[in-house]
Amino acid sequence: MTDCIERPMETFDVAIVGAGPAGSSCAAFCALDGLRALVLEREKFPREKVCGDCLNPSSWGVLRRLGIADRARQLPHAILSTVEFIAIGGQKVIVGLPSGEESLRAIKRSLFDALVMSRARDLGAQIHEETTVKSAGRSGRPQFDSGAPLQFTPAARA
Ligand SMILES: Cc1cc2nc3c(=O)[nH]c(=O)nc-3n(C[C@H](O)[C@H](O)[C@H](O)COP(=O)(O)OP(=O)(O)OC[C@H]3O[C@@H](n4cnc5c(N)ncnc54)[C@H](O)[C@@H]3O)c2cc1C
Image (cartoon, rainbow, N blue to C red; front, side):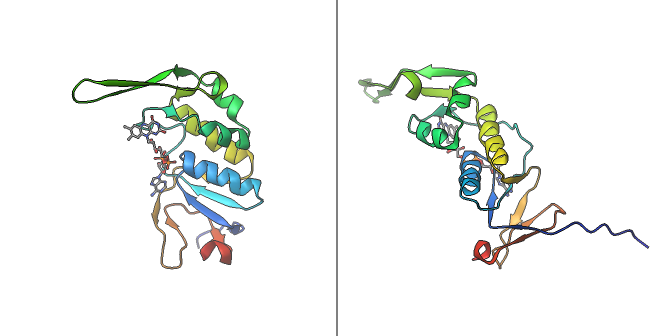
């Protein structure tokens, strides 16, 4: 006879696919609002992401609300002071960018994304790495390749 170890079923209000900046910040804000958030991420963080790595200055307000603006500033970075638009004819427009704390910074995505994900986790979101979502399912429940027993509240399924 096979031994059967029963694990308690966990219940979530929100299921999020992907722990990039969108998924992790969404999970963090859900957790701040008292929702039980689950994030399913196929990779193990830190993971590489093809990107120009430039953090738009309008992101700083969001990072402040998440309580990680200072930690993001401490990550290794380059500061961009201008952006240059060059027309096919060679004409140029150079636009100055904000300086100081609200500057446009390039931060390696593996580091930045891991920071946002760990903040979501610290705030109480449950994050399952190395878990690939296969489909959302007809009921709206995600189908994924992990044996974790999970269920969702009716609001989460709606
Ligand atoms: C070449 C290039 C340069 C760019 N340069 C910039 C830039 O300088 N500045 C800027 O702001 N933006 C830039 N972008 C855009 C930026 O990379 C994206 O807008 C940003 O990554 C989107 O964040 P996200 O959280 O939505 O998705 P992602 O960062 O792509 O995260 C999605 C996550 O979902 C996971 N996932 C996917 N499918 C599944 C699944 N089925 N199950 C479980 N997990 C899954 C992935 O592993 C990933 O971790 C660039 C993009 C490219 C391609």
